[in-house]
Length: 300
Image 1: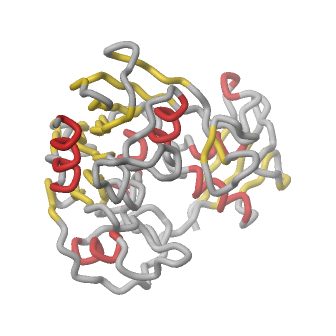
Image 2: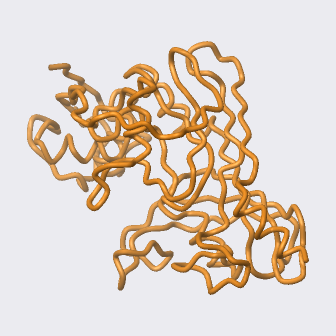
């Protein structure tokens, strides 16, 4: 079992234990950090601590790192478009309607099941091999996936350092007040409805969304959206908060007359320095047919 010893620097004083752990390269994610704490694999100054423990400068952490578990999932033959691949990683173009990884009610037919045949690996969570970031079930577009533990660790590090450019196309109701905008508003589970994400939350996490107007239509606008952070439903919640709800979004938006059966949100571009070579990887995905048809109807 791999052991990690860390001394908390002065600039991290006051930070929650789970957030500090998630920022360590060897841990890599908030989910892994929480699991470490829950499984009593973390000691602070020789004693167990809760995930919300506020660290002090000079605190010494002893961490028994998670060991990668082999996935017990069975590969499934899904018709996936691979936009880029090499021995370290691949960029996949996810269709709408597919859940990224297994969860309650989704034990088969997920993107992960399809990726097992493409040697997806890494991350320490057997149900999510290779997964670095996610898209909502009804959001289409590009995802980067690791093929080893080291690739997953490096890609997570790039994500935290905001080196991975994630651009989306979104059709929204309304007319933006400016051609460009930046939304900085923490997001968490809604205080009254835990199935929704909200700005009205008791568990806020930093969330930053940037957008620019590509095309202004009669009752809609086509936006290019770039994420600085990647919170659950971030784009949909942020745009709804500034009265530009995403078309076809029945959770945070309003009823749509464009024939959409899902939200008009597509991960159209993914760009990052390769985690091993530093060479630029830059992939694009065109709008799927259903979104293109809705856009043409909005233009008409």
